[in-house]
Length: 183
Image (cartoon, rainbow, N blue to C red; front, side, top):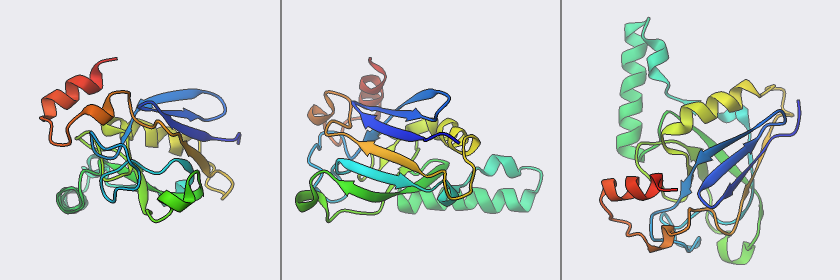
């Protein structure tokens, strides 16, 4: 297995998995917030994080359609998780802090995840939106699950797409989607 790593820069999560590179639109924090020290709103603090593929959590309920009870239970879990805990998407995995670039300023924030979701923005996690199924399938496909396949994630000083800091956190969804899709 070759070394795998991700870089979050300028609104893109770049996944180098040894035999190829995949790019995913990504954001972190709330629109209009660029200070990583703001709890539950600011972007993830710049630095390096580790992903353990064995910790991936999924609620990929449509794979369980052959068993009505499992399908209903998993779908209910998906709905409740998204209603109570926010817009998590179908997959998530914890980002374990490795090295913060600014430990004195940002070291107090923790419990970040890489996940998907329907809405743009997060409470500080890395959000790949509706591309989470594609990204996590690629992670799982390139994993060995032998403890040596951890993924290093670098978060740069400019993790969000340029202009993110000028948006309003309460902008209408359509406005955010239009800005997000503009290249």
